[in-house]
Length: 458
Ligand code: ARG
Image 1 (cartoon, rainbow, N blue to C red):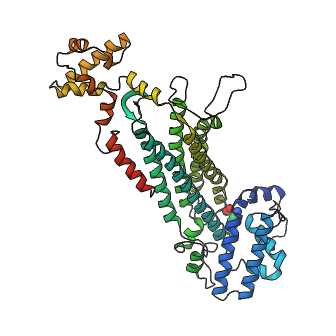
Image 2 (cartoon, protein in one colour):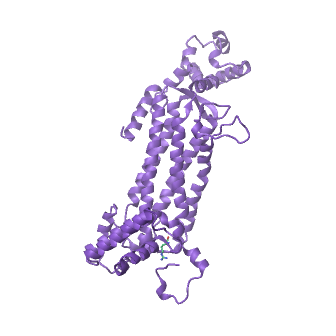
Image 3 (tube, rainbow, N blue to C red):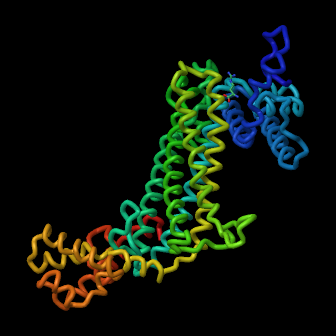
């Protein structure tokens, strides 16, 4: 048991209490951030004259030594320390003696942990953005190659109208684009430094908070010291953004699973991203997509957990806040892994274009356009809807598509039909006449792709 706060106590902590209270098994994740925060803090202390330049240099050299030794595994972060802050400080004092005891001047573990967590989260916000941008590039690549790949669009998972694969992918591009924008908003809003908030009420030392904030890449210090030590909003915002990303990935996974099924066969997942069955030799399962879908639950759990933890906490720091870490770390790692794996699966997936187009043809996806054809010839829409409804029933009975009917058959349903019906309801016409902004028609899609490229600075 290595504690920073023995002075006031006459009895040792009960071992179970110690274990329950300790956080080192998980807060060692922000070891690097703790070293970076302490380094900035001592630079600032020297700048305002609280430490000499020599003391500053000795402390920084000591911190660098600890970092190098942990990296080379000469020094192991062990659970004999209460938390990562105690580990670093105790090792510093071991190495450089009394000067090391000056590190914590004008600082509390409350602002220290608030800083470490914020630095760690900021790194993860950036890593998530990067992974998302890569995924967006993969999606854009599929869009560019499939502007003319026709497939059925669905509502209620029933074939609705023909679209293109580019159009379908473009919907996901928009979702992940919004996710990226959300992350950059969060990064901007969270980028203020809690260091110097002290335990809750700032400190009597003349700290230069602007300076330490700038050393750590922040836009400035947090403006209220009580908020500085107890704000976890940024984390809640990030978890919420992660939940939305994961929700998007899960919807996409659901589609991949359906498309990869024996019935659909729209896509084939690459061998490298599928798994087999221990008993059924024919099986090739979409486990990655299923796991991405499945892991959504734990990410939602992290958000719900932190919201619940925070809701009853009076100002300022309370130990409850230590609970902000484990599930958040898990959610951050889970979502980044899911993005990267999903990206890999998507970029190696084969699209069975003929099957997709055939499915659009077979599914009466041109029924709306057939009704529109009649409207163009002067039939009121409600009547046209009913005529085409009867045609669909007729075709189902004969197991044919609408365009398989002879002109005589068409005419028996309505005398208005002419030879030009075939062109009017071809898949190509159905898609390419839809040219409003955001529609699947060839030229509209090229415009959309242009916007996507602009977003990715391409
Ligand atoms: N391990 C603690 C946490 O994660 C560090 C802050 C401890 N502060 C205190 N006053 N006990 O929140």
